[in-house]
Image (cartoon, helix red, strand yellow):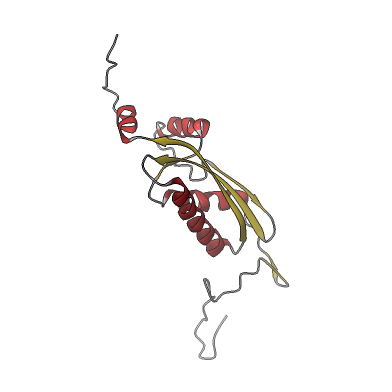
Length: 153
């Protein structure tokens, strides 16, 4: 692509670009894993989210974290259904104690929809959020201290 002056023209991405995933020029397929990863990262960006995923997903994530060189699974705790033009997202979280859960859900939903729609061009039809647990900071401190001893032996 070149402009009239002979300099290469730039392909436009973002707000001014077309968001058509299917056009006469071809089609773009966004994998479920990509949408899940974007949604997971967007969820973790919200203050008040302690972790993403239910008990099993968090246990597997904790094991993976102990393996040297293992990468973080940003899609942990996120399930998606992606069609040609739309996506539906289910997210499970653990919240920090004291956070208004209904407001936390609104913030997560807003951030996930914005990120997924902006990055993929898919219309997000719904974001369902399940709060699996609420964590106290005293709980997380004692779990992370391997030298803590039980009070009774």
